[in-house]
Structure formats: C-alpha cells, structure tokens
Length: 115
Image 1 (cartoon, rainbow, N blue to C red):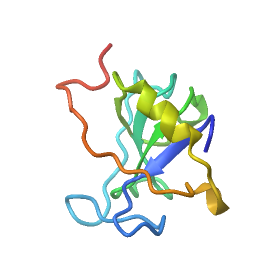
Image 2 (image 1 turned 180 degrees about the vertical axis):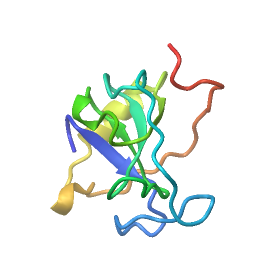
Image 3 (image 1 turned 45 degrees about the vertical axis):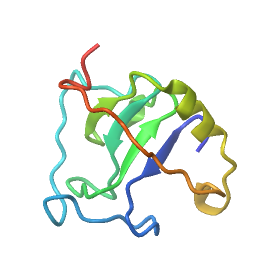
C-alpha cells in the first residue's frame, strides 16, 4: 500500500499467514525505544495481540500508530531503491500487488535496530 507498508512472509500466498519457525504463533515483544518512526522499519504482522507467525511488513513511511502493537525487529539500512521499486508496483484487490514481489536475498546485522 503506497505510503503505508508492504506485507510478506505468507508461504501459501493467501494473506492468512503461516506458522513461525517455532511452529504456531509467538508473543509480541515491545521495547519503548523501538518505533515505527521512518521508512524501512521491519515488523511482524499479526491479526491480534500475541499472534505472530510468519508474516512481516516493511513501512514505506513513519507509522507511529503501529508502535507497541506490532513487534519491530529490524530496519532497512541499505537498498532503499528496492523499497522504492516495490512501492511503485501497481496493486489490485485487497491492496495486493498485481505482479509477484520476491525478496531474493538480505543481510542480517548483529543489531538491526541500532543507528
């Protein structure tokens, strides 16, 4: 959704979710210093509190209303041009992209939230 976020991580592509790597769902983890305060924040998507599975989202802009509702666990630190391309993909029903978007690779840093 342009200006808001892109969601992924559903292995079946239904938008209904999938299991976590631990099986089932897991609890939310909030830290007061972790905020959805800029483009590129990476968080778990869920349908209600403590229902994290496999889905995640990346913000396209600051979204402070998501703070302490979704577990924030990382951020984009390089490759914003890729995020720009993803945001421009046309969307259809239920705000789903009209063409598949796949993340082919990424790098995890020791502390993905640190500045």
